Image (tube, rainbow, N blue to C red; front, side, top):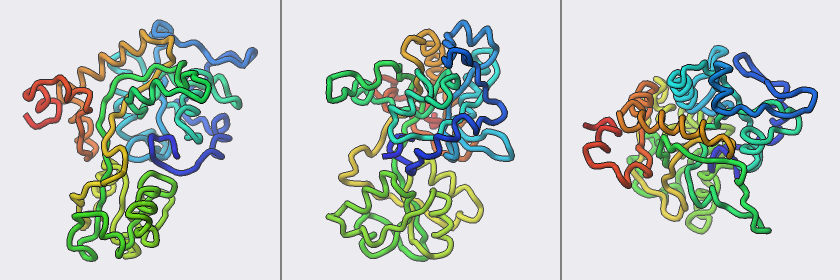
Length: 323
């Protein structure tokens, strides 16, 4: 399962790019002699004048490169956090490994064996999930003991977009027993659609390198719909060439996690940094600025369930931009 939290392709071989693929704006500031990553505590980050923000590579609309510059919602949020800290933003590109725990180890607390000096100060798009945070291995050891996960800033969910010239509507996923649907290969939508309804949709599932390629196929008439995360779908529907397509209103019975909160992660002993970043994100969510940040990129914002448990209706409306 890909580690951009239940999404993406099997890109483990891309890890060889970790040392060679450092782009402009990235900083490699560990100890070369000892092959040890720098211990960048809150005070040292402020003193250095920059914050290294870890974001996934080639993952629109969350984080990607355009005209040589980092773009996307996680990049914009990282820039805003750095500005609130009074430091510069530095991008730290993450190429996903086979498991999220590998990504956390390689980019947050230990460093990849090919380049231990290269670590992020904070990693974006980490599931804010207590069950995962306290996950244990077969020996009873906590898998994520070296990591502090905090600061939920978005609620994500699954979404289908369809071509109204091929389908009148999509009220249930059962329609894809008879109509082809595109997915990014080796993602949860791929597994869900190929195994759901006792495999009756399997023959109609078409696999693509990414969501953009799946939408290209829908424009060509090769598929009648595409399933991905809501923000990915929104991003594609914002392109002029895709505006004829529509959002489906169907649910996804049996999918496991229909919605989930997305947050951040720092090294476990860097709690002071975590508390500072958490305070910044908390303010952005409660004032509605997070909603504005998403809207500025043409994306719908979902207030994390974490806030829905205690915010009063008027505060929740302000956070969601509907007050």
